Length: 482
Ligand code: ZN
Ligand code: CU
Image 1 (cartoon, protein in one colour):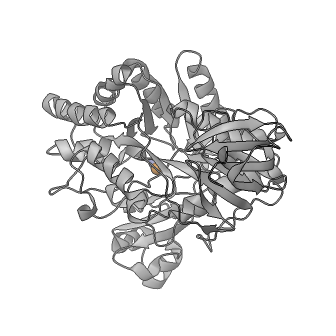
Image 2: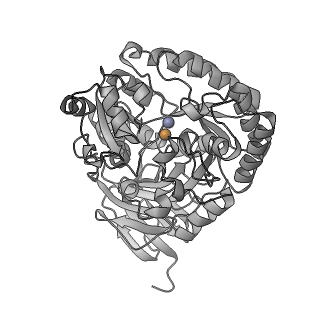
Image 3: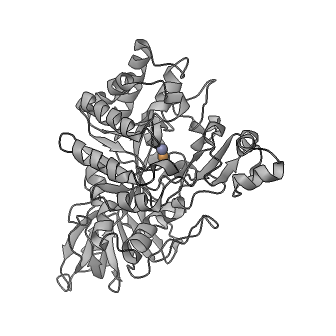
């Protein structure tokens, strides 16, 4: 229809607009890459569109924003990104936990967890701008917004990452971070928990994060500690952000280790108290197990560990570390040494804490999925449908509108993603259509790449990218510049 008023109309929907407002029946019209109209039932009766779809009463919501990902290279190497699109995700935030693919061409040192993003040769971008252009050239199926990682800066600028950065090294890192922020990065992330970053103190981090007080952007942190010393780590986090005068986001908030189970009442009240004097956000994934590199020094025989990948023994992926140690007749720590380099899934949290943190009104949803793992944590394929299905509908942790808000409007607002995360005229036409009665995650710790159910359609920048449980031809994702 060449003379149609709109490119696309979705009719007969239940609109959950991402703000937390109650669902309302209506139609959504799209022109180009933007939402052109949001109308009450019947108001668009006479309107015409090139593509006209009756969604049969299903929910029309803003496309989900995966606030915590390691999809830096996934978006380039596997632009279909089925693990994300199949869940209704339309934007991913990459560069979390202090590791970003750019700006870095590693020479000698290439310490983990950089290897969660790829191999040494995969790091090919000496500037952040080149990475941003590569995303735009690749046109993945979802939008990419990016953080600059502290460890990436350290490895690229320092002689010895086991030390605190010298004044000259801080200046070099500031230069690289400024280039990234200038090229459109939405913030800066740290992974102070990891060995190559441990020596960085508050001063080093604040002198980098402080650039964003002028240039804009958020400070996002995988804190120094999520175990026994979590309260100290939170205090450090708040101090650093106050010193730098920037908003801060705590990544994948959790209370790890059996001795810390139940402490989320304490940590959430620390966040609540800090929020009275500074801007604090947090993200979480809906599982009681975490996943990262398998560090033999952190192996705890009292908690279950599944091997997610191993370069030395690829066939051990998906197996319990305890069983491998039994077969090899050695300790779990020794087995972990032999598996190196490797990744693991760690059952560290209490379900009670997971639910309390997810229910906290300021918690955003982020998968923390690891897309290159051989046997990935099921959060990679299941996070968003699991929050809506299991935690929302089945357990009743929150109403549908609030669950959607945690993965759309709240996320866009907290990370400063303009015109995203809401169904309203003028916003980008990033949308998902799903069945609230059947949406559910299907991936689990036995079959971790099972596609979620109940997602009918995904629209990115006005184009349908997913329909009837399969990808379409359209690849309309772009690099989201701040
Ligand atoms: Zn992390
Ligand atoms: Cu992470």
